[in-house]
Image 1 (cartoon, rainbow, N blue to C red):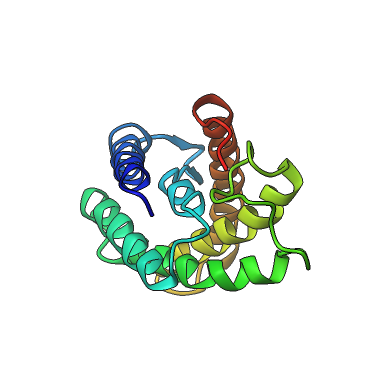
Image 2: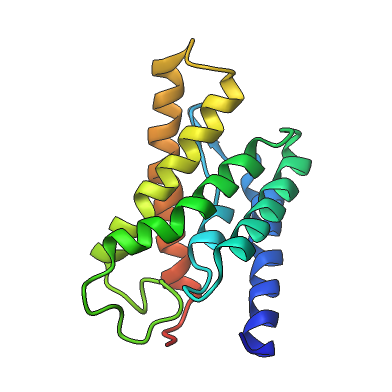
Length: 171
């Protein structure tokens, strides 16, 4: 990674976390739908990022959100889980010939269908782990699943909207 890409990643990290804790913390629809935009930062990290570094970054992002949300370790554990699963998921959805010189898996660099296949399951897993850890188990299964499903859709929509508004095509 070049120093320019490291600086860009640090600035993105700070911006995503600031938007999450300052704007989206209190953005709740119908007491069931929450937006966790910072997950988009983890999904949009370079494909060249090693798995250990990816999990460290995910832990730092999740722990920072946990500090502001007063949720001890819940976001951190869900973030580390998707950081752990991301390389495996990418290897499952990678075409035989590999990728055409992309480093950031954003919609501007790949098509919407591929990005949906890539990101939607990871967002769902993140939210599933986070909300069921928060509820302390499966006692309120259907209500918690409603939160997982609706929050996944909102988060996915906001991540896509953010990419169309703020990201440019890179290779």
